[in-house]
Length: 87
Image (cartoon, rainbow, N blue to C red; front, side, top):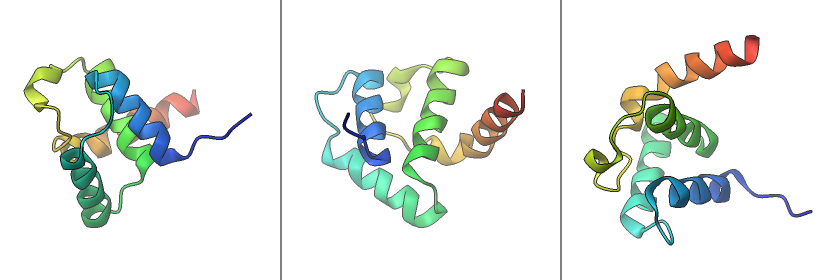
C-alpha cells in the first residue's frame, strides 16, 4: 500500500473538487504563498476547502479555480473539525 503525502492528497482533492486534470501552476503558487504567509499546512488547506465547498456549500464558480478564500475560512474550518473530532 502506497502512502500519499499531504501535498498529493491536497492536489487530488482539488482535482476532484474543481474538475482539474492537474493543479495548475497559478494555484500551486497560491498554495505556496498561503503556506508561507499564514503557516498553514497542506492538510489544513485541504480541510478548509472541504469545509468551504462541501459543508458551507459555497459556489465553486466564484473561486475562478483559485483558493484565495482559504485564509478567510481557515479558523472557522479548524473549529468545525476540532469539534467534530471531540464528538
